[in-house]
Image (cartoon, rainbow, N blue to C red; front, side):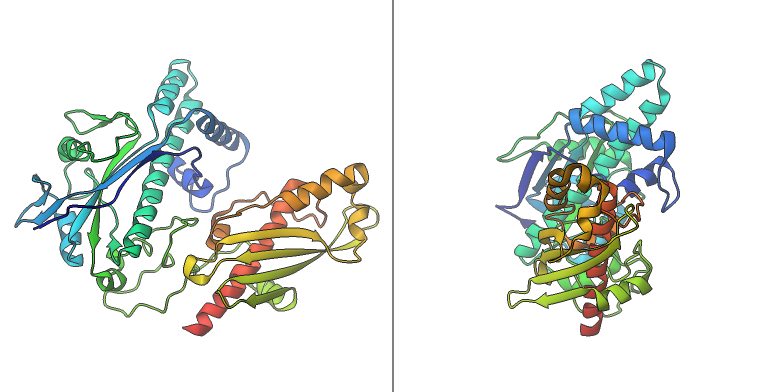
Amino acid sequence: MRALTEGVELAGTLAEVNVLPQEYARLLGYPKGWVLEGRPLELADWARDWYAHYGRPWFYARQAEILALRENAIEIDGILFKSKRLQKILQQSEAHGVILVATGAGVEAEEEARRRWESERPDEYFFLEIFASAVVEHLTALTGARLCDWAEQNEMAVLPHYSPGYPEWDVAEQPQLLRLIQQTRKKCMPSRLDVMESGMLRPKKSLLAVFGLTRHTDRVRRLTDLNPCESCSFGPCPYRRAPYRRPPRSCGEPAPAVAMLDQDAEYTVNPKALRRWAAERLSLDLLEDGSVDAVFRYEGTTCTNMGCPLTFNYRVKLGPQGEGYPIREQHCAPAANDTGHERMCQYLENSEGLMDAISQEKPLYGERLDAVLAWRREPNSAGCFCASASRDHKWGLVFETIHYALVQKERAQR
């Protein structure tokens, strides 16, 4: 048993929740890789937009003061819990503590979904209900990522979370876990949360979880089941310290050298094209501070005026590998002496507006480079820059080429 006088405590609300489209589609019941269109896409966009305006997502996390592993129970701050699976995780990692977490999508979405149902709009009810579930998953993953960052700075590691209702943890223990979490210290719970005798939470789009905490970081690296990064597919995580590995390593297999990019990336572009572009169109400059300057030369043609050739330069500055290559600067502009862009139809109609849009748009700015793998863009292979979808498509090509080139460098270092 170990008592902790100080520990992490986080609480807050979020102004924006970036639920990944593929995660939302998964919860809606669509197969992997499915792209919504038609009426389902309309409903999904409506639910996302409604929640962006009226949703109130929140999170709370605090480190428990006491953890003790009994013969058939886990004692947390004097309260006993029985979960064979959680107990095994804590024992395997030699955990010295746990962090208690609560997240919620807020009561607003639940009430609006009920109103839609009562108004005989079952489709809107369903899509909003599922989006709120996706918000809770996102909040839990994001809170875990923040805890991972804090733990690493303190030479510790955070384990994958576990919750009542999961296999080998009776949901009936949810009331006592909530009472324990509500014993806050300096911060307050951002939202009210209640629990029924059955263990069901109110609002129902909420989650209680326990994250183990260990100083034996070597165990977390060796055992896939204990490594939250390798078992987490949350692509744009700003605190990722190891790539998500689709086929996990077998227990005891030596961990690879540190690689901050997803080595099993699934690109939207054919790898042969990425290989050619990386060799012919991309230049990378690795600076002394670990940051990366990248320049990508795009060559295309206008869609009108007999297909005039045009050339644009994309300049991207990335942070160092140890930070996951965050996108710190990005800019797109016609290459020197290029005149083809002046023949684009939108340039002829509104040259200033088009060029301002091209120079000011910064998709994925501030995120880690791996975020491009989860970025769902509208297919648009037009060679010109007139439409925003076409410009997003080209930025995706640029980031995927840079990602591909850096992955090859990481593999060569292993």
